[in-house]
Amino acid sequence: MGSLNLKSIRKAFGNHEVLKGIDLEVKDGEFVIFVGPSGCGKSTLLRVIAGLEDATSGSVQIDGQEVVNTPPAKRGIAMVFQSYALYPHLTVKDNMGLGLKQMGAPKAEVDAKVAKASGMLSLEPYLARRPAELSGGQRQRVAIGRAIVREPKLFLFDEPLSNLDAALRVNTRLEIARLHRSLKATMIYVTHDQVEAMTLADKIVVLNAGQIEQIGSPMELYNKPANTFVAGFIGSPQMNLIEAGRLGEGQVKTIGIRPEHIKLSRDNGDWKSKVIHVEHLGADTILYLETEIAGLLTVRLFGEHRYDVDDIVYASPDKAAMHRFGADDRVLR
Ligand SMILES: Nc1ncnc2c1ncn2[C@@H]1O[C@H](COP(=O)(O)OP(=O)(O)OP(=O)(O)O)[C@@H](O)[C@H]1O
Ligand SMILES: [Mg+2]
Image 1 (tube, rainbow, N blue to C red):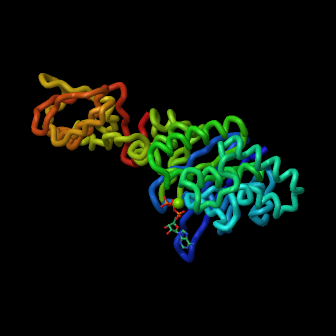
Image 2 (image 1 turned 180 degrees about the horizontal axis):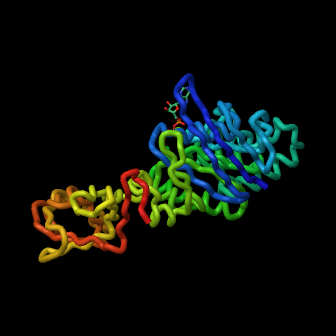
């Protein structure tokens, strides 16, 4: 079991309030991802859940039990950090088994659990090495292995892959997804990476300045952003957010249209535009347009397209895919 319930969590450092009333329910076995701009409080929230930081007020319940006064080691949580935090003088095997050993587990049990975790993470060839003799990706797998060995109710990951190169990130991401399926454990994971968030999460929590902007499945957030912040934050390239005044739509303050929901033509269409920049990504072409009526516009076309800077084109948004936001920046339904 590993459900988590946060109620009205507030945290201030001095008179700087960093978490401003967080309510969140995580079900047993769920994979929940926290995203949000740098400094919005993601790591602080993880640390409050782990007990490494005391909340100023509010309640943290694990499996229905209040844990705000329970020390970190007794919460049944394992945390994996961006910096692997391995002991340099210990072998991989001893790094992985240390937590259990310190809790007084018999050697046979420690060995069996380390063997199982190292099998899951393909770490068997490295068990006798020290961290300095491993690559970054291998070190991060050891840090994850150390968490698995403790069989926690709840795994907390704070940007675990951000030190890895692109190819390794993809591999390790797949490994974490597989791990989640086989362990069926509850995981809470902080990332800046859109692809990680969209592919790993059952549920994404979008944080901004210490508050939750929206909670939903990746597709809910992508298709039904509740406000302009989430609309602009989820999706890459970003959704176009156009001042509606220019398009003459009454109570609508902002119109949102994703770059992939705009068609381009050289001959005719809704918004006459000039191409100001083109990015050829191979699978996609991203165009940046200057339009008279809608301002700066990003368009994403599937495949390769031969547009050049200063070309005149016509952009036509898919009207059914438009999002409309009111004066309070919330979506109008
Ligand atoms: N121990 C501390 N003392 C004072 N202020 C702190 C402390 N820890 C964090 N803060 C502040 O709290 C805010 C939130 O920090 P936090 O590390 O939670 O952000 P984050 O969302 O994890 O950012 P990032 O994406 O850059 O990791 C920041 O303004 C930070 O400066
Ligand atoms: Mg952080």
